Image (cartoon, rainbow, N blue to C red; front, side):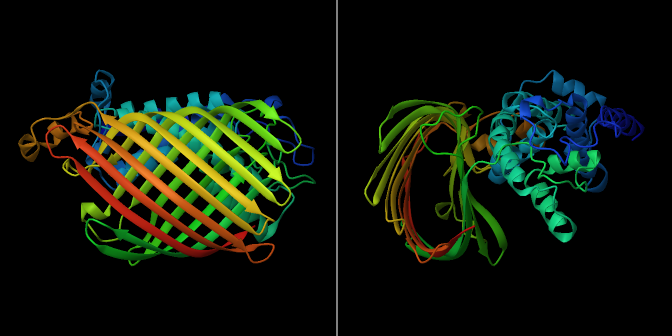
Length: 490
């Protein structure tokens, strides 16, 4: 116990490094015009100290309050981890493929809020993840956590940073100001910590005090009912769905200067008897682009895009594997092209994107170990989408996503899994089944505008998972979804 207290005292002392309450009292003078982000002072000490403090606070809670076994760290566990190669862990799908990327986004935003650019912040995210994996757990470091936290954290982190920048406004006061700070803090907690330690969270001025130029954007909120039909079980499920989507930046052949000056993202959640369940997060961020063609009514642009996709389709309280669909593309990057043509009252758009998947995951029919019932893998994806808009009244779009994942380090002896000790599970180090899987998503989306803000939505989607196993027969799963709802542009 004394050793643990000493360790926490030493690491907590590191979190105080650079906090300097006498540093610039605000990142930008609140009564000034917008300062170019590249001219903002980089506060390296503050970025590092916030990340160390974040890790210490989370691990301290698990260690001293929850008394989790894996949080009982000491110098011996740290030394062991430093001499151990990463493994593939057995945490549940939501923890590994959305929880860790969100955790990484907090590392990322501690750097972004303190003057670092996108790629510099990604390095800070990697450092935070390395600290967590090697020093903050008694379990061995994890391949999947390092990739998901660093790469997925950068994708979510930049998006959440830019969204928080749209919300914050140093001109406001009272409950309005508190609400803005709270909402931005939920999206980017370490940015809120930075604003609290500098005093900017309550300082007012004559300008918004944002760190980024405000681009055009379109935010959509929607809700409705989703009917899901699982073909293999001949079952029908109804769920209430809440969703939000945003398109950020100019979607044209204008060259972007910084990563994610254009992105689009969608998130959906299911509301059921067991509460709130996040079912889907999709992001596509432009890292850089080049104009390929342009005339009076047509433009084509190509570029390099970062992908993050998360699907967790599961009926609340239903443990039947056939009703569950997992798709993850936590760390992926690749080229893409977007084309648009306007003619009279019609606007047509087409997009094609190819990505290399460093870390992905899919549902397994056989691998069950600890909290894990899915396979990790790497591979590639191809996404196609097209849309047609008539008089800004009717929008009709088609989209297709095709993922190919390979689990190249799998299990041969399944009987052995039944008798493993906790330590043996921790060091088993397999991606799951020896398998390859193809995941298809085909969809149709229609929106009919009722007035300036409101519109009706109909969406149909078909999911297919075809898995080829080395030790088991091939398995196919199919399901269909219909969504009926209403959306609002805000």
